[in-house]
Amino acid sequence: MDLRHLRYFQAVAEELSYSRAAERLRIAQPALSRAVQEIEAELGGPVLDRNRRRVSLTPAGLVLLRETAILFERWEEAMRRVRRTAAGEEGELRLGYIGPPTQPFLGRLLAEYRKRFPRVAVHLEERTPERVWEMLAKGRLSAAFTRPVSAPPASGLCTLLLRQERFGAVMPPSHPLASRKNMPWKLLAGEPLVVLARREGVGSHDGILAACRQAGFAPRLAYTPSLIGTVLSYVEAGAGIGIVPESVVTPDFPLRFVQLQPIVTIPLVLVWQENEDTPAVQRFRDLVAQWQKAGRLWKA
Image 1: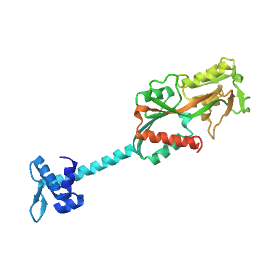
Image 2 (image 1 turned 120 degrees about the horizontal axis):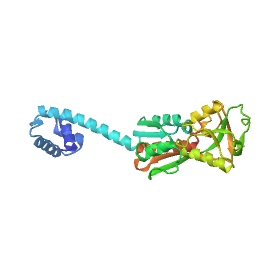
Image 3 (image 1 turned 120 degrees about the vertical axis):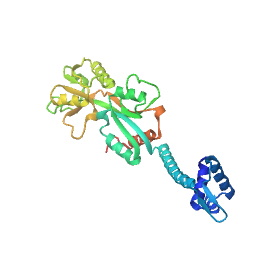
Image 4 (image 1 turned 135 degrees about the vertical axis):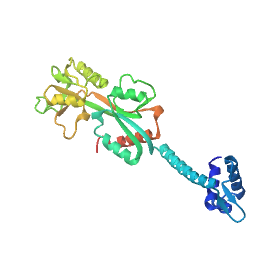
C-alpha cells in the first residue's frame, strides 16, 4: 500500500461514488476499483460496501478514512517544512560571536534575519576567538563572527572578511595625550599599558606587542584582563592606557580614542563550516554580504 492507494481510497470514501472520485482525480474508474481492492486485500477485510445504487463505508473504512486524513495532513505539513528548510526559511542557526566588534551591527542584523526567516531557530554563543574556531571545527556552531587565529583547528572552514579594524590608544579625557588626533606607537614607551590577555585573543595581543617592538620599545604591560570591557574599566580608573580596536568606540564612549601610527589592523571575519552549510546558514551569509556591500554593518 502506498500514498497513491490511499489518495484513491480517500476520494472514493469522501465522494461515496466511484464515478465522481474518478472525475475528481481525473483518472479512469477501473484504476480506483483496483486500488481499493488492493487495500482490502492487504488489510484482510472490506473498507467499502458497494452495490449498483450506492457506496458506503464499513467500520474499518471509517477508521481508515480518519487515519488517512491525519496522515495526509501531517505529510503536507512535512512537505511544507522540507520546502521551507530547502529555501532557508526553516531550520537552525547556531551563531558564535565575539562581543565588542559585533556590537555595532549584531542586534540589528539578527532582527532583520528573524524578520525574513521567522521559522529559523537562532542560538547565540559568545566566546573567545580561539573557542569559536574550536566549536566551529567540532560542528557545534553553524557560523561565527570572530578574529582569525594563528592555527585554525581544522580544514573545511570558510571565511568572509568583513573589516580591518585599526588599533588605537584609549585614555581618560584628562590624559596629556588625549588631545591628539593620532600618535606614534613610540609615545607609548614607558606608559603602563592595558591589553587583552593573549589567551583570549592571540591575534590582538601579538599584533600589539609586535607593533610596540617595531616602534623600538618593549611594552610595559600593567594589566592583561580577559574582557575588553575590563580593559576599559582599568583605563577609566587611571590604571594605564588601553590599546583596543576601533570597534569599542560607541556614541556615548566616555574615553578618548587616539589613532596609532603607523596603522596596525586586526581582521573581523565571518566563518562557517563548509560541510554544515545549510540553507539557513546560506541565507544568513547572503544577508551579511548584502549589509556589508550596502555599508549597513557599521551604520544603522
